[in-house]
Length: 323
Image (cartoon, rainbow, N blue to C red; front, side):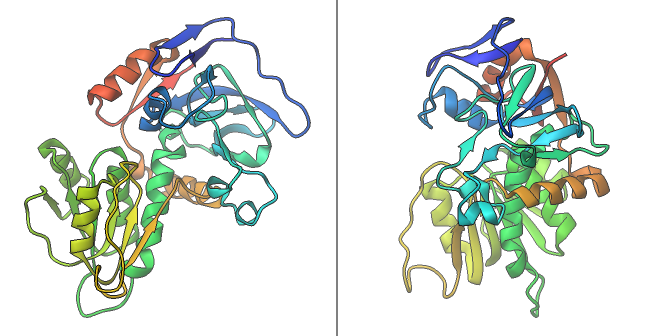
């Protein structure tokens, strides 16, 4: 079958027409892949940041067709199935989880092995190309926003405020969700004037740079996660507010009584749960405006797609299609 394979850390994506077909046993299933989003996490695999075993087929934002279920989206974090986290649908934080496209063969191919149909969510009318990025980018932002809703919906004498740090792909999803799911004043912070302009087009009430002042913010979602952004979040979060860290830049800040505003919560958020994927697809059916613009490119251009993403030459999301 046709597949785009990463052979070595730092190497190019190799297209082959003769990759072995996926073999299955037990509860495993095979889907015909329709589309697969290109995500920054794919670049982290290429750079060796995750220590993935290579060669491997990348791709974890996958839609396809199942012989019985029809058009489906793949939930890519595959848990052990027996721990407390898996019992709650939190496969993404299972200690023994394996993520498709990051540690096991993913969707840059014509067909893909799935360990169990539990990890397949029916698309039920959603466009398989336009919706593919929801599987990771959209779902990760959705869970992060959900982490802030208790704070943002708390009654009070003033309108609550939310801050999205990093108005790139995930941040843009978060702005859409915040405007749809809450009645808050949304701020977007980014170095890029172009991304700040996009944030305003998506409905943000304010778009600011790093040197602009901010009022106390009730809910902050940091899609960068650097020392600089976490320090800014710590200094800006309101008492009893929440800071949700999603970004992978490895930042650290001092934490303790008196080091941060009283009773502010700081937590990480990773990917999204299996039930939340179904929730998100239901939301997309009701509110198609949450779908980000996508550019479909053939699987044969996987390497060029990586180069464009790395260079910042992408508006919206890139999606590889197998046809």
